[in-house]
Length: 165
Image 1: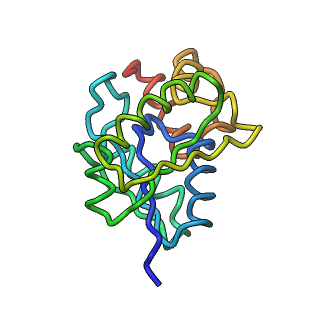
Image 2: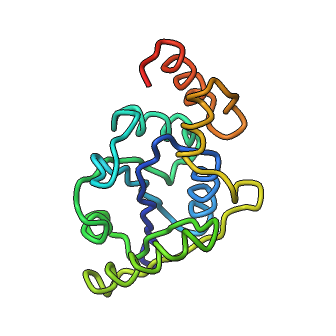
């Protein structure tokens, strides 16, 4: 039987409990999941370095033997091919996510018709959660520990206490 491989691409700046929920659920469905962390997204400046973002995810999913985390700089369909994946897994929270993902799906289908995109609905408790919202709360010294892994909350607190962010 062929190994079922999926990729979960994103910037993960920072990774949230919602991201981890989607990745863990994907790991229950697929034999292997490769979390692709976009090295330098064109549409925004990241708060955390690529190495930090990868480290946060690896620490959070250390018990998952079928999940690996790598950075990438290519088109997502090329990244999927590189890792032997036939599926891109994405999470959806709201209609606004759907509009963006709908556009991206059509572009990806044109570039890689052999690669399917699977959408997983956000768990209700994470349907409002975004990396941008977490960064905003943290920038005002607000508590983010229930939204992100412990090491991310700690690093955000350090950054804002030092005036780095």
